[in-house]
Length: 119
Image: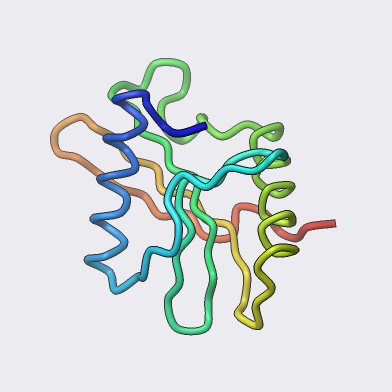
């Protein structure tokens, strides 16, 4: 399955631009497996980071800060575990979120370590 929703494509494009401008190397974009999907996988120094990207144009329903549910975090964790089985690494693993508020002025909030551990 590939990302085809225009809003999702736009959000990931903004997120990739932000990451590249901040010296991240994009490894994968819109990576899928049988357990879920990861929006962006990127590395910087000794970190391999799995990014969840959320784009919102309004504050309706809590806006961008309320857009990642506990169920979504569990699905991301499962996908990260699967990815690491297929692609072992010695880098430090982290799951971050890029929350993009589309209203003018555009704002990007980078939340680090939204998943404490994978059990």
